[in-house]
Amino acid sequence: MRFIEEVVVDEFLPTVRSMLAEDLRDRGFTQSEVASALGISQSAVSKYAAGDVARHERIVADERVRDLVERVGEGLASGDLTPVAALVEIEVLIRQLEEGDLLADLHETAMPALADADVEFSVHDPDSGLRERERVLTSVRRGLRTLTNASGFAGLIPNVGANVAECLGDARAIDDVAAVPGRLVDVKGRAMVPGEPEFGVSEHVATVLLAAREGGATARGAVNVRYDPDTVEALAESHPTVEFDAERPTREAVADAVATAGSPTDGDGGTLVLYQTGAVGIEPIAYVLAPTASEAAAIVRDIL
Image (cartoon, rainbow, N blue to C red):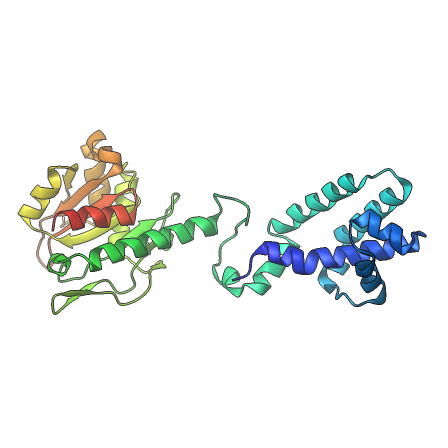
C-alpha cells in the first residue's frame, strides 16, 4: 500500500527542490543562500548540485513544473516571493497534479490496484467514486459475515441460492451493484460463500433492488431469503411489507408494487420487505431491503 503523499514526498519534492536549487545557483545564489531560501541544509544543496538526488523524469519534463520552478526561482531571487509565498505556489500545483493528473498517474503506477478499479476518483475527495465503491464492498462483506456467523441462516437460503447486495447511490444498472458471485448456497447446514463480493455479478437480487429504487424505495442494501409466511409475518412486525406478482417481469412487477405502496415503503429508515409467493417454475422468495447490505443482513439475523 502506497499513499499519494508518499509519491509527493519521495518523488515530487526531491525533484522540484533539485530543480529549484539548480535554478537559484544559476541566478548567482551561494550554496548557503540556496539552503536558506529553500529551508533545507547545505549538505542537501550539495547533494542536489552533485546530482546525488535522483530526479523523476516525468516531473522534470512537465511544463507546469518547469514554469513553477522558473517563477518561484525568479521570485525568490528578486525578493518578490517570500519563502511562505513560494510554499503556497508549490502546494497549489501539488493539489492540481493530484486531481486526476500527473501525481495521480504516478500514484497509479505505484499502486496498480487503483488503475484496476476502473473508476475516476480524486484522492482528497471524500465523495470520490472509488471510495464509495470500496465502502459498498466493505458493507457487503460485513453483511456476509453477519449471516454466515448466524446460526440457522443456511435454513433460510432458497433453492436458487441467496445473495447479499448493495448498490451505489446513483445506481442505474447491475454493474452499479456489488454482490457475491454465484450466490450463497446451503451445504450440509452451512452457508457457503463462493467468492469475494464484486460489482456486476448479481442479476437476480440486483434487479429487485434496482426496481424497488425505481419505484421510490431509498434502500441500497438487500438480502434474499426463502419465502415462508411466518418469516414474512415476523418481518412485517417491524418493517413495511409489499407483495409483488411473480408472473410478471421482475423489474416491472417490483417497481409497480413499490410505487403503489407509496410512503409506507420509506418507513423505518428506508427498510422494506418485498416478497412473491411463487408461480409455475418460480420459487417463492422474500427480499429484505435496508439502507446498507450490512443492515439488511442484521435484520435477517434478528429473525433467526
